[in-house]
View: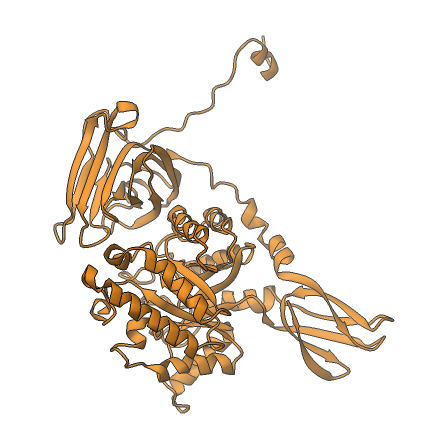
Length: 551
């Protein structure tokens, strides 16, 4: 006898859903501490007390782990709670864990030997109550290529308890519809109907000559000499691919003012003059960055003791007041504080109030400038939730943060449109514009590991994804030429000045795919109607040309 599904349900037979398999052993610590380990970097260790697989520390009194940190490690990544290793095939997985505490933690998925490449990471702000946290990641290598999770628990003094860590296969990112529909969204978001006035019966031609959507690059300008052939080539190449810019290093405080009162204003004005001459908008990067490398820890403003914090605050306010007055009308937007999640030295030394103060001072100094917060691993990786929490807190306190900067250094991670959408959506819910501020591929230690074809694919995939998202208001590459790029061979132009496939692909997107060139006849009312991308148009009527902005 055969039964249909309705008949089986009527008889009380209900098909049980397929249960995902947890591929991590002893994630709940019910089999003791086997596989669990607290790594404390001997080169600058934390002062810490740990208890692993102890009854009463887990959910509902089960076995769990607790870490108490009384002194931070030298490096923010220097204290790691590590569960057992696992094996996974090439697919999407979801890391899930339960935790509580009074500190933020990072969850990092690492590959295996020889390089232990980071696959994905997430950042989470814990509370005093048990909550479940999750992170979706792509296991893009088989077997030993993906085998470890670490929880960075040395980001802040405090305590954390953890239980029930699991790794299960996920189907969450299998839907490719959103990316497939990117062009439809681009048409809706980035194009509009517009008109040109003429005489009735006139033939009117329009041609897009510059997109209204900012697409830019970090610039490294080395010379003012008009006879410097390399500098001339560099500027002309930038003008071919981009129409928006940020100074890569020159405006960072220790670079701009290496000694108190010794300001490299002439060097910064190279960027002002170049962008103004070409009608570009210029970003200011960055008013404050708490980084302790590159000799920045030796800068006169850097507080080395808590008693120096008051002086630091005076120096920061003076820097903001002076420089925003200097570049008012010349710099249109600023990264007010760069990497607050990752470079937290200043906050650990002096408290978080200076983050709010910097934005308040900047808004008062130049009310017309758009003020951004800026950080990495918040779209290219999974540290989105903690960024959302930080920014929401600022907005709740009425701090004038006006834009969200997402750096998008992908390192060796693949571009996954579904993950990009998920993370951009979370940030967009805050109601602020989002700008991709530092886009590139490759790692600082290994350089560009992708083939030129794969690099081009990743750039195209990401740019299509970002351009089709309604909250994104601009995209900036972090450099374009191999000889002036912080990642070895990380540019879209080779050292010998020839194009890589990525440069060709990017140029074609903006100038061949997303472009408008059309002709129409003005009606009896003297109006010619068009539909096209927002931006600046060249308009031709009876051989006479003019420009018209369509926004």
